[in-house]
Image 1 (cartoon, rainbow over the protein chains, first blue to last red):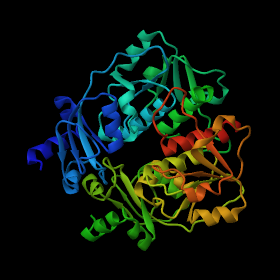
Image 2 (image 1 turned 120 degrees about the vertical axis):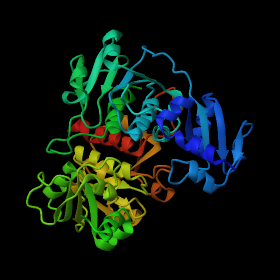
Image 3 (image 1 turned 90 degrees about the horizontal axis):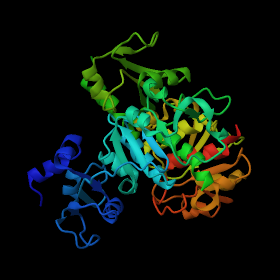
Image 4 (image 1 turned 90 degrees about the vertical axis):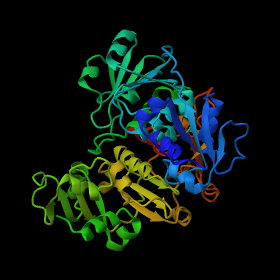
Length: 243
Length: 243
């Protein structure tokens, strides 16, 4: 059984304020929880419908499905819910391609982007400070465990980019066609803008090269691609096909 | 003002049963509503915070934001909410590439897929009958208007594929690399499986060629890509780069 206060505490972790205050976050589902454990995240508490799957976990509690529903963010909760301790974020790795996300809003997009980055071997993401919180349950859900293996830093993008001395690529609706690029992009920063507005004029100024995914000829619509889908195409073109 | 029954009716349209029964569906936001109007969908009712944007619409009602919140599916409602009449679905166009979706579950994925298909000039999607409903508000939201211009049919995939005489391509975790394909795929059917399980063994049997997006070397994770991201990469490779 869980006390009312415990239920309230777990639900409070759906909000960034409480995650920051308590320095922990929620992960749901056998697979994702396993990947955080494998990545050596410290588990604070684990709640399971069936305790047999996870062994030798301190603070492991058996609960019933009705109770799980009360603490889960999912419509169909997935048997296990864990609270993990946040971890200190590593310093930025400048030696390989960095993905920069400006003012990304949709947690599903960020989670999907993390998953796609890992698929194509990109290990470093930087987000502007006004981006959606990394520990949002929907980010973790959509990242399918990749979250636990990718380094993500929040910072002021403009000074970071200006100080970095890296080549800066920007994805935009007008720019050089991605299909015309001759070589793999192994280093530098590739910036993606906000879902509705793209890259801000402030950042557009400091971009060395704008790249675009051309829409099919004869098509006037849609105005743009989904952000995570667009990133998938970019990484496929600049990483995937060369690996 | 709206009566309690009207509010109840509009909210009932979040469920497939009521959409089927009443033969109508909800679209939210200025941009999406405009695109359905431009695509000659019949509008049943339109509710606006500010009536000036849409002109000459019968059954157009001014409401306040508090009321809009009561009928909207969005956390931050977007000024306008319309009810449209469903339209008879056109028969399948066999002359260009058809995207087949088996047991797709996530409405956000389906909406994003519709948007990406239009971007790359694919106009025909077929879904297995157990797939998420096309008129789900999240499908419409994520499709960003492309919904109104793409033909989507629900059917039993296996008999359809067997009777079609088309070349059948399947996306799978093991198959020929997408980067090795020599030519554009202009016709035939490209099948994508369910988010969690991929293509069923029943359909795998009748596929002529399996294609895969290889994961970066040295990467063991994630297990798969997001469905909509995977489709984006496929269409980019087989359509985008040839157009």
